[in-house]
Length: 263
Image 1 (spheres, rainbow, N blue to C red):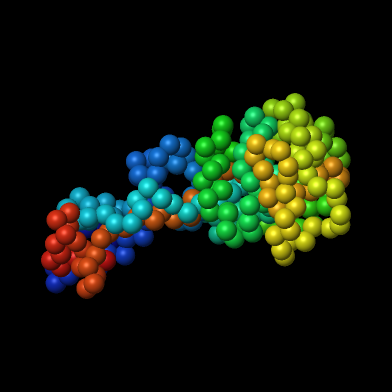
Image 2: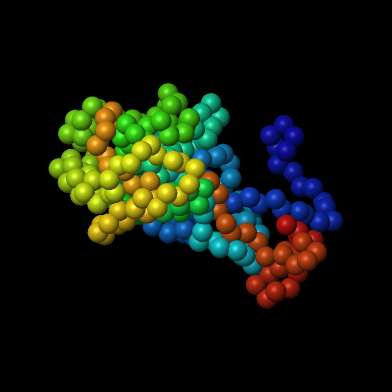
């Protein structure tokens, strides 16, 4: 590749460090399914699956979960690919202490099912199944002190207000009337307030009677100020790769090793 000219190099063997295909929208659509081509990419634009594609095209066998990926809740207006100036702060992981609503103004998952470490990857992907592929995370005055530092960066899609009615009008793309109904229904379903939020334990403060429960940290959305953050799916990496044998030789569809090709 000297001077921009292509050339051939004779080798005894080739070792592929393929990475994934998270930066390739066509492969995301083909392997991951509906709407994944529209996800934001948290990292580099260069992880396009080219190494995987070269090997598969000459008969290599795929391995792992080609239809699976790791993803997170990512700022709605983050750039298409990762930004080193902001880094991981486009992620928004404090949802266990509030609620998330979609464009219809409705909750669609159990925000308090577990600590965020155990739910954020699957909840990131769940956003792609919502109308418009986005949601707003809603927090009340009691929860705001629990928000992670990533909520305080300048590059954030945020709305704030001193009343729920005023906040509803600022949630771009959301059915304001249904949002207020959802919050009212949620507030009636939570336990009586009995102190500050304890983020260090699953407190068992769950809702009662809701079609979509919240299992922990369910406090009424009633204490101003109110803040909301718009999120979509940010894909981290894909799970599939190439099948190899114990000597790291790439296997073909018949299970045989491909001479000179390793991964």
